[in-house]
Structures are given as structure tokens and as C-alpha cells.
Image (cartoon, rainbow, N blue to C red; front, side):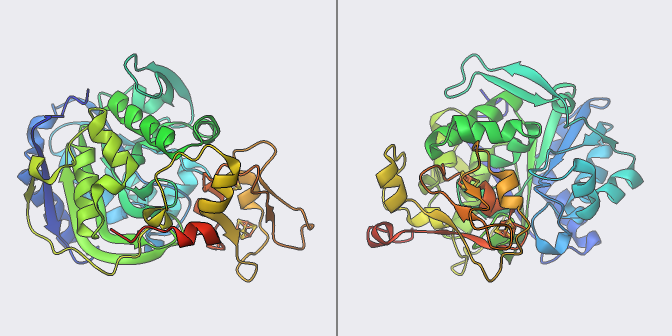
Length: 385
Ligand code: SF4
Ligand code: SF4
């Protein structure tokens, strides 16, 4: 069980911050951390890893990665407690160094003297009471630390509906081992249960969510940057994700990772169990993930049902630059998207082999792949919550 988890009560602090102007961000981060009483969470001399979202090598203005101002503010304030900080992530593609440089985090880390934690090599870690997974391979840098501070970016996600506090720890699994989980656990409910287990194993001490500029629509890489103007702080990832969902008018119980998070003892999502410090008006103009209006709850075990109801990744030939990233990143062997019509034409999906993990949609650098709900699925679509 998460050491920070109180089954009756969780605390989430919301602090408004309209842009990434550094002095304002630092003041907002300090205010949020003080509201949740962060200084009791750390002891001088402890080795703490900062885990930002470094999905891919994208610049800060694309709003894919945790912004360098948030990263810097968290690092500077945590360093005041006397902890020894390092940082790391295992991007879905490209090296940590390249992604961190492009995202503007490497310069900050070097300036503040943060070591690079080893997120390339893995070490086995057991979770005997895991509901879905009892054995993980975690980044050595995480295993060798005393604790982890998670710095998620709030975005839409085609498989998990949102990516925020809970999903951010998926990057603690090194390299291609992440893709293996998609193949082993192709059903969204199983994949979500694995993410909850992963968090119960890592037990991050603290979460600081960058939702100053979030991402809606076709996230998590090529959606629309969405100005929310808020930072969230908590020790409970379920309460944090649930609160972020309420801010965009989405019922937390509609998000499987959140629902399973409470069911499996990771945290609280019910409004009555979350004390919110700070105020914020819910936004009505956020474009939700396609998964929000899925016709019935997964899992779909039959291929016919999957092919006719589940959103399928679809390539827009006008946007495709024929780079082949989608083929390279497909975890299915052989890939469920290939050069069927030759390399002068956009790749082609083989929907009977596709497990709907959306890695191709997630990582297409041009935003040329979108989840498309088939006709029957559209007929049975749920109204947005
Ligand atoms: S990743 Fe995107 S741009 Fe590249 S080939 Fe695939 S669909 Fe086209
Ligand atoms: S084609 Fe795309 S959605 Fe289908 S299995 Fe491959 S990466 Fe996943």
C-alpha cells in the first residue's frame, strides 16, 4: 500500500499560475508545497529522483513534456531541504539525454548540479500483492534512490483517457520493456491495473502536476496545447488525477486508472474524501480523449467487437511524412502497421493484428494518426460526462 495513502482522506492543493514566467512559477510551486506540508516528507541527505514527463524529444512550447520552469522550481525548492537530487525518465523514443535537452530540462539540471539517474538499465522489483503484475523491471536509478518525486504533465491519452500522476511512472520502466506490457496486457483494464501496481511498488513521495499548459484533443504528443493555468500538488496520485479530471469536466470514475487506483488501494477519487486547498473553475471547452465516449466498458475480447466498436488508429495521408516512426514503435511483432503500399505511400494498419495500444498515434511526430471510432461504435457512443 502507498505509504502516503490515507483511505479516508487525501489532500490536493491547486495554485493558479497563468504562464511559465519563472518567478511566478517558483512562487506558485512554493505555495503549493507549503499547503500540503512538503517539508515533513524529506530528510536531509536522502537521494531523491525527479521524474518529469519526457515522452519524446519535443520543445517546451509543444506542451508534451514537463516545462523547465516547473522542473527548476521543484528542484530548487527541494534542494533547500538538503536532499540529493537526480533526475530521469525513459522516453518512449529517443534517448533521455536528447529528450531532456530538447525539452529544456538538461540545461536546468546541469546548472543546478542534478545527476542523471540511470533510466537505461533495469533491476527486478517484486510486488507480492500486485493485483495484475507482481514482478517489474524498474530503472536502476529509481531502485537506487530513497524516493521519487513525480512531475507529470496533464494531457489526453487514447489508451488511458488521461495521462497525469498515475501514468507518469510508466517511464520508470526502461526502454522497450514498456512496449512488452502493451503486448502482454492489451486490454485497457489490465493495462490500467498494471499502472496502479507500478505506483504501489514505487510509492512516489510527492506529485507536482504541470497543468499550466495542458494538452487536449489528440494527445499525448500532438494534441492542442490547452491553457489551464494551474499547478496541482498532492501525495496521492489518484486524488490528483481525479481533481484534474474535475477541472476539465470529466467524471473521475469514467477513467479506469483512477477507478482501479481507489479499488486497489492506491488513493482516493471520491470528492468527499479529497480536501481541495485553493479554488479553480472547471473548464467546459476541453476536448476529451476519444476514449471518454467509448460505447461500452472494455474489455472487448472478440476481434469483431474490437474492429467495430473500438477506436482504431487511422493515418491522414495529407499529414503523413512517411517517416516510419509508427512502424518502428509498434510493439506487435511483426508490426500491425507496415509499408504495405511501399515506402512512397503512407503506412497501412492491419486492424486484425492491431491491439489498439495507440503507441503509433502517441508517437507520430506529425500528428498524422488519430483514433477513429467505426460507424457502429459511433452509433452506440456514450454522451460525454
Ligand atoms: S509516424 Fe506519422 S508521419 Fe511517420 S509514417 Fe507514421 S503516420 Fe506517417
Ligand atoms: S498499429 Fe498502432 S495501435 Fe495497433 S498495435 Fe501497433 S502501435 Fe498499437
